[in-house]
Length: 268
Image (cartoon, rainbow, N blue to C red):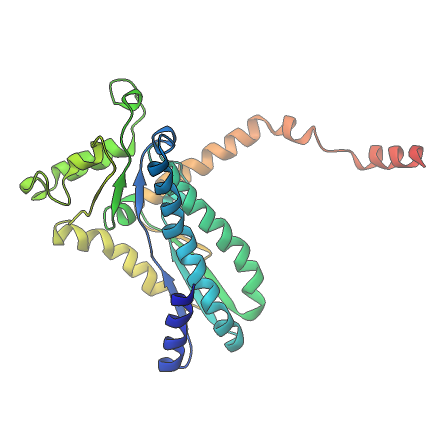
């Protein structure tokens, strides 16, 4: 927290104020819920995941709020991912830290709106945050191997993607070897994507941030990319259909106002 306060103080000293705070800290811990609970070391990975992806942004936001509130202006932009809408097998803790941050931001947005401080959550495709940052993998359990578990785990999906990228296989034991994601020990990789792919992946997100930053009426959430939009639409459609299927059961627990008033009158 002290480092965050120092960074904000330096920015204010140089520029006079902070117009836009952009939070993009992200690291991905890969592993099923059981795999991450298998040992004290893997449980530490869970805590580290929240320290980076949740408490990191929370601390810098808390540090900048007094300055923005005093100036009665500011825009906080948080880069999360569509995992803030969608659970992803093998990324349970990553998703949980993202959902926690978005819940925090949704609540904070109401609190700071009277001070003319705006809040936007930007949700790019999964690959943007995962493949451009450190990836740590917990030791896999045989019960979750592809031959035993048909769920498309993120470990397999990301490993397969990295396998197909040109140059990743050049050093089998190097810092970005896909095989490390299936290691029998805790291991980390730093994917170094081909420049053309990195540029293509990040272009949409950068354009969205530039367009939204400082806007007088920015969206509370902005989903980047066709794949993300399609995935979120499908999730919302499923939620809506399930709500309608069980709406009578949901509403059955409500107490009718007249019935409630009669019960209260009888108690009196």
